[in-house]
Structures are given as C-alpha cells and as structure tokens.
Image (cartoon, rainbow, N blue to C red; front, side, top):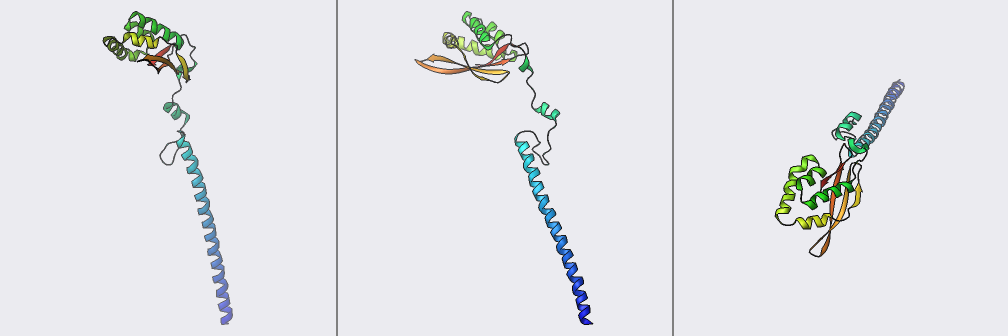
Amino acid sequence: MERQGGGFYFLINNSMTKKRWGIAAVVAIAVFLFIIFSYSFIFDRLELVSEGLASPKFPYLKYSQQDLNKMFPQYVNEDVVTTQTPEETHALFLSHLKTGDIDEAVECCFVKGDWESQKDFFQGVQDKDMWDVMVGDLDNEIKEKLFLGTSVTYSYTGISDGGEYGHRIEFIKNSNGVWLIESL
C-alpha cells in the first residue's frame, strides 16, 4: 500500500508541478509579449515626439489637430495674391533712398513694427557719411535664393574696399499681398 500511496502522491505532486510549469510558462509569455508591445508603443511614440506630433512627457500622448494648429499656426498670407513683388518693393525702397527720404523709404517698404529701429539705422548711416556707399550697394540686382511661401530671401553683391561682398535681403508678404523688407 505504501507504493500505491507513494505513487498517488507522486501523481498528485507531478500534476501540481506541471500546473506550476504551465502557469509559469503562461506568465513568462505574457511578460515577454508585454515587453515587446511596450517597446513597440514607446518607440512609435518617441518617433512622434521627435517629429513634434506627441507630448515629450510620458505617456507621450499624441497631439490633437487643435493642439497642432495652436503650436504650428498656418501661414495666413500664403494664399494671398501678390500685389507688389519683392523686386517692386526693392525698386520703390531704392528710389526713396536715392532721394534721401528715410521716412518714406522705411514706411513704404518695411514691416510697421520695425519702422523706428530702421529709421534710426538709416539716420546713423547718413550721420557716418556712408549713405552713398549703402545706396550704391543696394542699387544692384537682387537674386532670389530661398522661397518659403510667405518669406523669401534674396542676395545682392556690394563693393567695398575694392572687393565684392555678398549680402542678403529678406522679404515677408503681408495680408495685402505686398512683400515688405524684413531685414537687410
């Protein structure tokens, strides 16, 4: 009888061990799948974070379209029809500079918020007796280098001390379709 009892105990013990191994295998597979899916989720979300489409804080939630519009506003003036090209603005600006009219040169061709600083700059150039040099440099052909929808960069060449130097002039389109000088 001992044998039968021992065998019965062995069968019970063996089936319990198989159940434990089965449970351990299921748990191990579940943990493995959880790690794989978590890695995949985090990797995908970090890619969205690097593209600016998800929050950089865990759990890296995707931004809504409303959040994206707030963070990356669309350029309102991109679809506005051009009424004055950068070349036309440059020519108008240059004509006012040639007559020495700083106020008209600035107010016709620069963004309104920059008027005072530009007037001070041009007055400083005039005070240093560099007016003719500046006007001579600006009286060259401007060539488009970089167009970005509502802003464009042009280059021109100035001559100083016997050498040629490259300069740039940046324009921005306003809501009236006029390209204004953003910086010289």
